Image (tube, rainbow, N blue to C red; front, side, top):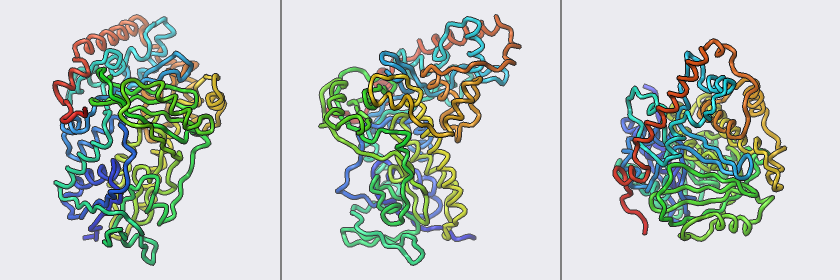
Length: 504
């Protein structure tokens, strides 16, 4: 029997730290591996209200956490996608929905079928075939049934808007009940052994903490992975110019909508994330084109409701740790890298990093080949998300500010340039990295930014024109009819998962 590791120490609480403890405490529960979380009482987390992607349900299922209980405890609302305002041009918006768009036909992607229909005079937009877009437009929501023969419901998908501080508290309680040890202390020094591996941690309470493996959840500080092991960040600021954010929480009396709003501004974009008890607001901007004072004014001019918090400035560097796993240390969350929150991928990357880590879980010898395979996977995941975020900026046609004039002519990676070039030819998307963002997502954003292929697959001409038109008309009607019977989003929450203790 091969020798495994006996202990894991997670340094840092917050969303990333307690997500790691929650998932690992469930997946490793039969392995007799001790899990310890070292959480400093002096360090606050960057939590203002988080927007997620559908993989949040994968995290909850893998961690054996009841979805409805999680929603109640975190004041969560449902998210069907993102509405983008003013990105292509001012006063124009489009929607990026989760879930599948349309019904594939005889092996052909629905997008190709839709392209063909446009040439025959079909007036329906791409979003008319998205059940998520229709639900969002009408503020409707239901859970997708686990097993259904209804293609409309099967095409739906959702994520969550949630309160990051409440998430931390909820997951901490879950972990402590499972036997995870919590040490309340601040790490002052990281001691390495003669091979350069982390040996033990020195804390402010004079406690030495030893472990076989360490997970760095210390945020931008990256106390273990960078300050102790020397793994630096590969910066991507040449492609993504925003480097600061300002955040404010507000109290609103309006029912929450089931989507995030991302509105382009003079030097970046603002977010609106509606929770059950409040709204999270932020402005992601470039300090080259906007001062902190201007950013605060822009955000306060665009928020609704009473301010619950003072504006908070968060500086950041866009990029990825050159090695997410190095020796006996895994960098998680902000310690592993940061991609601005335009597509709400921060929590997804925490979950995906943990899934990849479990698939490459180390033995006692911490094999270098295993580490390299893991890091290669993470490179692909980060690059996929990076290029998808760049896509939003690089395809904008605004010229009304210096920031947007820069974006219009910005440099883009060869990988993204290739994807766009191939798509423009006839709508193919064959080389999209790890496929987290499906063809549906790419097509939704490209269509929203007015990029449409020159041609469609010629074999679709073999379909009978009238039969195709009738099928498409039936599809739109089926979506509209199904959505019209759903409860309102706010009504669904009140009936099934109202927050336990909404703030006053």
